[in-house]
Amino acid sequence: MQSDISGLPGLPGLPGSDHPGTGPVVEPLLDGLLADGVRTDAAGRYTREAADQSLVAHRDHRRAWYGDLVGALRVPVPATEDVIYALHASDAGLPLVLVARPTADGDDMALLEELRRARFQLLDNHRVELTGVELPLAGAGAGSPADRARIMLDSLDFTVPAWFSFPAEPGWDEAFAVLAEDGAESVALALPEPADAAGAAGVAEAMRVLIDRDLPYAITSGISGLVTDANGFGLLNALGATRAALNGAEAGEMAVILAETRIEPLAAAVRRMSEADAATVRAFLPVLVPPSIRETIAALEAEGLIEPDAA
Image 1 (cartoon, helix red, strand yellow):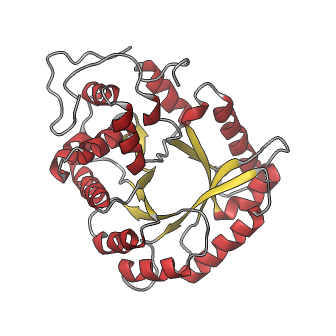
Image 2: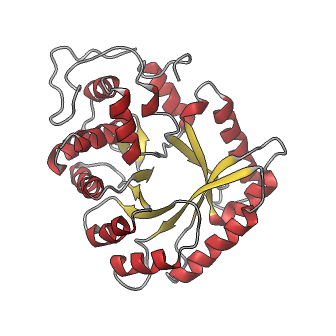
Image 3: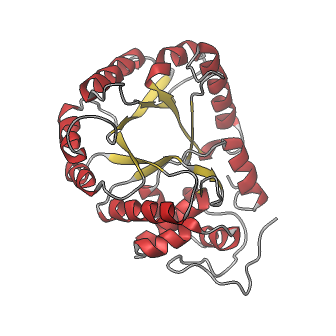
């Protein structure tokens, strides 16, 4: 059921949050936004069976009426071989993003070598299309984050976009500056869990700095549903905070939007976005990983933000 916010205050800095609006959001706001990943088994291991189950679920999402909202499958480097065995002959150009994890000793060169080996396994395989790589820059490697960013950029030899992962908190400005100077890379943000006021302030500061430096960011963890709750931040909150930042909101206003727990002003704001507004927001927030694509779709549909004929 769509919510009505007549007489309720909107959110400072977020256009459209004080007017309910009606109907679904414009298509560019959600197209390709939702990403899922290869799961582990009950013991936390990557296995052939878990990879097969993950691919079955991903194919189902892409074939569903909401398939246009689904982005690339995120494949952790250790699961690459299992994913290759789980591919079907009918898979054609399935978009994948390879996700590297920190090595036990924080050796960045070893991490890159593992990523290269995984990429090599995917070469000339028409069933998949590697669309990006994600690698940690805030791990245990030696040197400052800025120094590590320079070294990693000098060592990268991938022809696809690279996403460098950071926790969404203050303190990474120098590393962000190095990535911005390169001009071809992006950031993957891990949001803190559970969500609280301090966490919202840190996320807002990181997002504000990234937007000021023209660095797009994916949100790869820390989303709990449509709206922020004790377990994590909301999809609508993230879109709203990004929209507000692009409209000139400062970190304090963005933090209020990120911490908002009412769905009404957030749903109103996304309904009121034009296609141009939505395209600009998505240029900075192209990917978001929800806890469950199916549950996210059900929640969006229940609020009237998407409809089968409009998705």
